[in-house]
Length: 246
Image 1 (cartoon, helix red, strand yellow):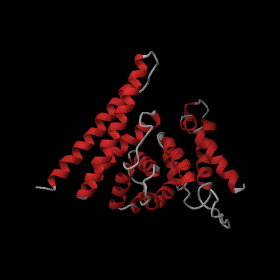
Image 2 (cartoon, one colour):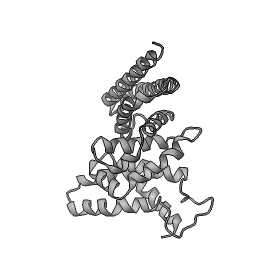
Image 3 (cartoon, one colour):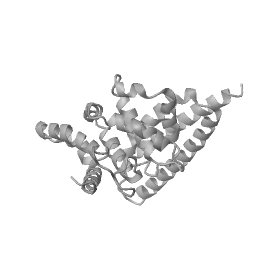
Image 4 (tube, helix red, strand yellow):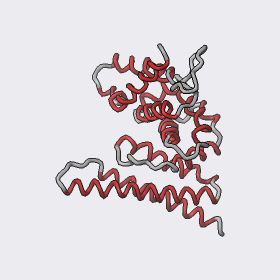
């Protein structure tokens, strides 16, 4: 398949990612098995260069292309909410692909949202799996680099149901790996988390305003819970920062 058609196929799957993630709700085990075993390697095949292929400089299939990568990462992050996909992401080397993206996207300036989805994918999978050998290659410092970089990009769709689980696992992952943070890392983290809380609270206020106008608003309770959880991370980081001066 020509590379531009591969890219178009990736975009199509990305557009349908919420339906694909929940396709096991369909009472057809054979169809679900086909989707798992066929679609997972097909998705990876359109982001990894094919043998003998030499993309042009403006081709969407370069090794790291921002738009292409973001489409891929958002798709895989959505699918990762369903644990049925996790073994296939390991077998089909999606985990390796995400790990290979860490250095490129963590070091980008200005920060991009790619790292949020890399963190969401890896953390959602590690929360369910304890023995993924691919992740053994990720050093503790790399984990922390992913965690702190993921907070640099404002999550403008923070109250989109699709972002709830990745954001919650990001909070947990940041708490876990903040122990190796430097003082400057913690200061920047607190600034970024404060900004995130401000954005999330703004979304909540808007949702409540629309609810008062008679529009049906979902996820308000979950939104409040996420704000509380993020604020707890802020408190934990602040307490750790204070310990630097003792």
